[in-house]
Structures are given as structure tokens and as C-alpha cells.
Length: 269
Image (cartoon, rainbow, N blue to C red):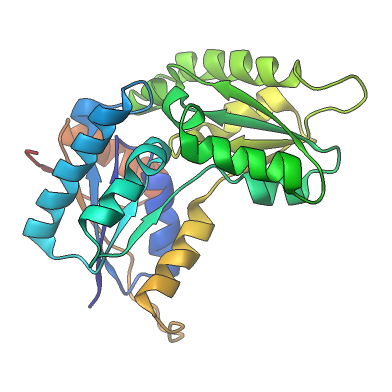
């Protein structure tokens, strides 16, 4: 059986794990929520790289994974190149804001991007944005907002704060588009944000598409592992959950978001 380790700054990567489990239930998944240090998006680049390296070293020692999914946009943007150089014998699959799929879906050419400050300030994101805005077809304008506090509110499952922040940041994005060319596509550039889909839809309106990254990451992971299609009899979904924070909080959200009665373990890292 293949083993894949998945890590995020906290619970947001459960949105990626959900897609991975749906596509590859025959794989053993180990998920680490680094909730004691969340969110990464408002920390410095050096800190994110060092923390990601520490986590990967511990995961390799404990589980000998066949691949690691970096289920955090900030860690992907700031650390995945370093991780690939330091661990050249191990495949890494990262997540990035889905700018290209959003550009292809947009009818108005106006795309909003919600992400953390760390992701939006990274060289990796800047290069992707520039390539698509200046050389992509069809032409598109990206309207980006650093959503300070939103990942943390989702981490705490604070519904009142989530709704308030969604209204605020979506309103900012909608105000950036030129008259007569409204934003019609919204990129959820942090793995936490898919768990705020309902308030985001309420704030953006019914005509705005929401684009996330879980399914493409699952597809890419299957390719990296060179797995064939599943037989019609699918094994039951399961995963091992680890957290540097409170296990009860992660168990509650895993049940709510994944529909799985899992018992997370506290993990020192």
C-alpha cells in the first residue's frame, strides 16, 4: 500500500484530504494539522521554510512516505522549492491558487483572488500571475486581496467572524473591477477557504464561480504515484490524523467536513 503524508498549517488542508480520499481510498494517508503554529500566511518566509523542513523530516522518519502533499498555499509558495532540493528522492505535490482554470472559466476576464498575505507576496505567485495576465489566452485581470484573519477564523470555527470577513473581502474584490466588467470568478487561494463556501457564495452572489484546488491536486498525486484506476469495489475511506494543537477540535471538523469519525493524535514537532 502506498503512503502519502499531507500537511497544512492547520485544518484547511482537510479540503485537499477530502479530494485525495475520494480519488484514492486505497492509499494510506497521514494528515498533519500544524494548528499550534497556524496560520502560516502571516509569518515570514524564512520561518515557513524552516518549519516546513522540520515537519518533512519528522514525517519521513515516522512514516517513510511515497510522496508528500504540501496542502498549504503559503508553504507551497515559500517552501516547496527548498523542500524539493533538500529531499530530491521524494516527490512533493503542492497547491497554488488556481489562476489558470479561473482565467479559462471567466466570461468577463475579471477574476478575484482571495489568499493569504504570504502567498500573494511570494515570487512564485507573482510569476504565475504575470505569465497569465501578460501572456495568457484569453486576457484576464486578477484582483487580489490578502484575507488577513480569515484562515484563523476558519481554524477556530468562528462562524460570526467568518461571515463578517467574507463580506468584507469579497466586497473589496468586487469593487476593484471596472464598470461593466464585473468579477465573475473567485479563486480560493488558501486551502482553508473552501470551508467558507456558503458565506462566500452569499457575499459574491449566484453568478460568481468559486474555484479551488483539491481535485487537481488529487489528480496530480495519482499521476505521481502511478496508480491505475480503481476496481468497482472501492475500499472504505480512512486516514490517520495528527495535530500539534487540540485533537478534539480537529476531530470535530473532520467529522463535519469529511464525514469521518476519526480520532486525531497529538503530535510533537
